[in-house]
Length: 615
Image 1 (cartoon, helix red, strand yellow):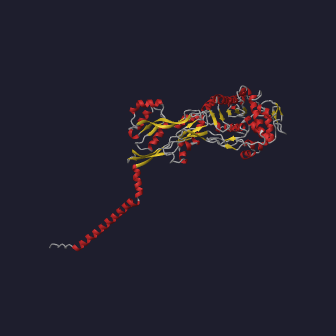
Image 2 (cartoon, rainbow, N blue to C red):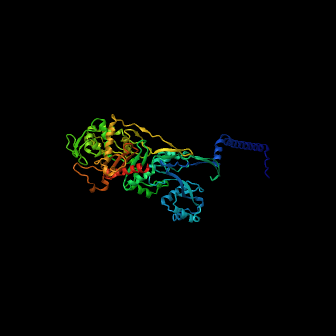
Image 3 (cartoon, one colour):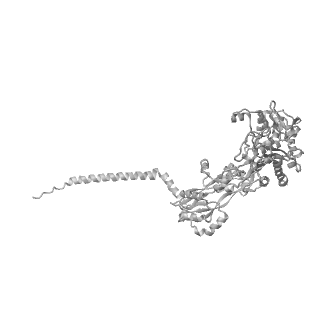
């Protein structure tokens, strides 16, 4: 018997269907609410944020680096300029085989392995369509070689860029310094917005000291780009403000003359106008070509410069520290007059050596002088007279008086790398060596030896103070800047310093006149070498500083010593003596006699300035 099927329960099916519809509607409504809430958040609450992102995806702000300010000498001769430099650039997306391309390029353009490695690292941070520099500052020969083979290198082009150039080459390198690529340390300290788009920054000298003026202000342009970042068109442009053009107090003619005079020696010559502190020439020899550093110096060339035995990278004019030797005697003599321990008329017998009371050690003179007074002691450079004067003064009064001339501290010249020298004192020795000051050290300090150290610039400043009877002006290299479209020169004012004051004005004459006798009297230490045929009156002082110490019974024999053990030769002077317009300091490392070597050099510098340039 067949089984009967139960009838459908339509009511139950209807309820099940309606329950499912309700659930579906709730789910649809819930999902719609979520979507609506998200759309509301994106379109309303986050409208400003996403609008900005969208705009930035279409419009980009690009920095326009400013042209760097030029540097001129006092007569308008260009010392630092901007000129086109050609560089090799590679666009990665247009090069099918990068390794093969680099290998072939190296056959016609000199490419160091380090430069190729740097290029490969730069590729990682660039987009395929962006050109990446492979080599900067191509030579004319490299340009010609590439032009002939250009068809073999798709994606490789030569582009012109503005680069710093120093037309004077090695001349003035230590004064101007140079610019170089911004490194990581500099990137951490500079204002990245101000240097946006800028690749170079001043590293040394004038270029670094006046970086804020030379750099200028960055401009910008708004460009429209596509989704890949390619520029489609320029929408808005605000040009950069060029850096300020600077005019230095230096005279290229005098600078080159001084370099030729010092050629073949290691040393320094500094010349300045004692009336206003303007530095007229600042020579440090040997020198180097600053153009080597602008585009990145090779490791081999830099290592050669750094390890060269004559240290061409060392700025002797500002950083070299030397015992001043007998060039210090006029100031020590002035200290003796001011403190009343000597007079211009006082005489003493110089047997060629000096002994302290209750001491048998002999402090030798460089020659026998006989009876001397202050005039003859300066003109003939008697060590014995100044041993005795130093002993009577004592280190405390002597150190204090020398400090009034700026010794032992930086002059504050507008450059980098200046060192302060060393003005010894009782307190200094105790703090440095934890030892007492000995009387014998006072004697050798009085003749500019021992711990005493000065820079060539300090000696020039000291000489200017003597020339101007105590008036002091801070040495400076900047004369002014060019302003306006008319190229007018706005002069910077000289900065006066605290003068050296003495109780009686005639004391100045009592040390200045002997400085004239150094060159214009028969027994003066520079008479035969620099003074006897001069067309004007020169006041000066020779100096010789020891490189190593001699025992009490040892004799200095230059002919028996290696060159690096010869004394340093020094000379300070100003001219004309009655109306000073130039003060000069000369230091010749291992030159021997200051009278025989350094004084003639100073005379030539003065002759060129006073007789040739001013004629």
